[in-house]
Amino acid sequence: MNTEHSITEAQWMEYLNGTLTEAACARIRSHLEICEECRGMLNQLREWESVVIEEVSRLKVTATRSTGEIDVLAEKFLRSIRENGIRPIQGSTLKPVEAVRLLRALLDPLCGAGAARNAVRLATEQSCRAGEQDVSVPNWGLFVRNLSKNVGYVYGSPARVLIERVGSLVAAEIH
Image 1 (tube, rainbow, N blue to C red):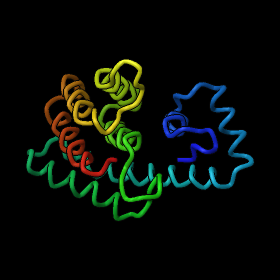
Image 2 (cartoon, helix red, strand yellow; image 1 turned 180 degrees about the vertical axis):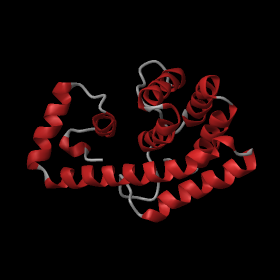
Image 3 (tube, rainbow, N blue to C red; image 1 turned 90 degrees about the vertical axis):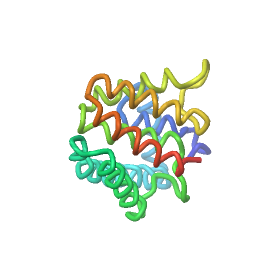
Image 4 (cartoon, helix red, strand yellow; image 1 turned 90 degrees about the horizontal axis):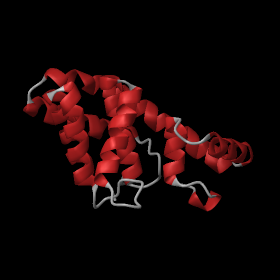
């Protein structure tokens, strides 16, 4: 994202999640008032999120399906997002911060926004080394395992399997 504008990818995602400090939000809002490029990128992020949420609502019904059906629907979910052509960042692959946001969007309708945010935060803490704040490509598999395990404890095996399947499919798309 526009790190040359002194806003990191993680800050943009936290801004969208509503988890960034008020001071940092104010700085971003001030920047958005004067930067057309960042306003366009923010609009693109919001469009992408809207498409993800729409696809998640279609995928949500998988919670009662068999593993094979979950695989097919998860692949369809990701294909639909790719084919839509909306990318939060230009390019062919997802960055880990985007992939985490995608899994959180998948969890929101299943367990609520607060529980989804907390599940992602816990899995991130469990998966990152000391000093790391964000999931990276090397720890993606561990993050998905931790997230699916944590979600499975509370929401059951179908939710766990759904996160595992989508997370493993996303693994091939992140760089």
